[in-house]
Image (tube, rainbow, N blue to C red; front, side, top):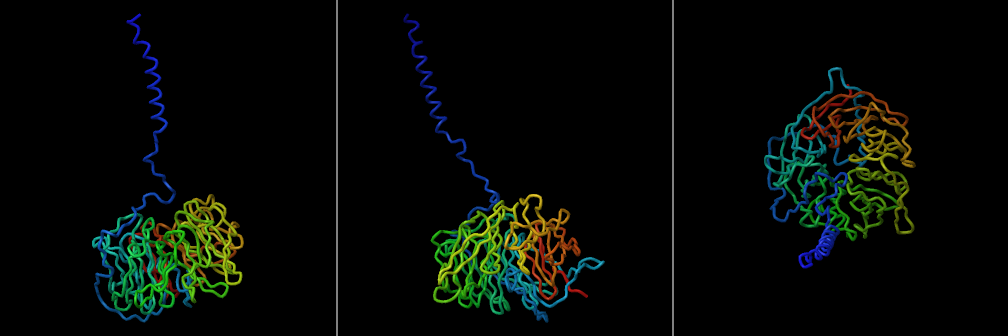
Length: 476
């Protein structure tokens, strides 16, 4: 019997081993190192930290030549003078390209990106990234010839990620303001290129640089720059002449900077700024003793990525949209006494109505026009029209044969100029009854032509990821 005595320990040992294996399996986390792939957030650059990098905003300047231009047209900021992306100059523009093809006046090579220009009195201003110098650079060109006149910049390290620069400056007679990819704000004299002041939003306001870098464009309102840092202050107002922060908006909900830009709005006898942050949409007082105060906010629609800016409609209504499956919301601002509130009217997915991933729709003649995103079902990438009263009812589309990508569109002289991803420019009549194609032509043999279009003096400026092109679109 003794020689069989060890056998009595075998079963307890097996039971103990089984218990150990079960406990180890139970507490093991097989996805401990797994990182969720949130739609639209893949391949993003790491969060920026400027603390160990010495950035001297405005430190570099180069002057090349001077020019006095007879041209007086203006496209002074993102979406133009009236924030509606409509050129209102009384200049007759082409309906079709000539038999010889588009009239290209000049081309300029750029650093990889989607930043778009402004136009002011015959000069073109664009924030570029010069990779060989590792510098943000505000570059000034002649609108007539494309010759570079001067550039003002500063060294800052940027990693390529679906482009680098992607903002539009804001310009007046005396000031031009830019926001760089890593949230450096620079104010310069547009006539001379002289540096006036700069603000590093990350260092001074704790801004978290958005995915794919800054997309927000500055707003100049009566010599005051309005910017949405989304850090310690939701919005700020900065004196253009001095660089002093005049007012700040608290950020109690810790909303973050998006790629969307601040839009002005007048409602109920009150001027306000509307901003679509990562977290929600808000209205900020733009005048009076309560300037900078949050008047209303709504967080019923809060996507993780926001690129299009708010579209101010009639009667206190506002349209907002975002990509990567988020869809859109139409909401209404109301006033009761001195108090403002906001209430959603429609929230829907991109397959159910007008939505946009990158560009901001155009509101014209009581109708909304835009390009549906790739996740909009059968109507994906088509140019469409709807009425704001019911954005889920698409009135007409460009059809299956006329699809567009993430490129921009602008309205001028009763025509839409629509740019496809690959550099094809389409001209379509601005109709509320149907899509009327006039002509189209391949302008650039490039890719990712996403930067907004600018038009002034019958000159159309468009770009792909690496080149800026100027077209003469004046009718004979």
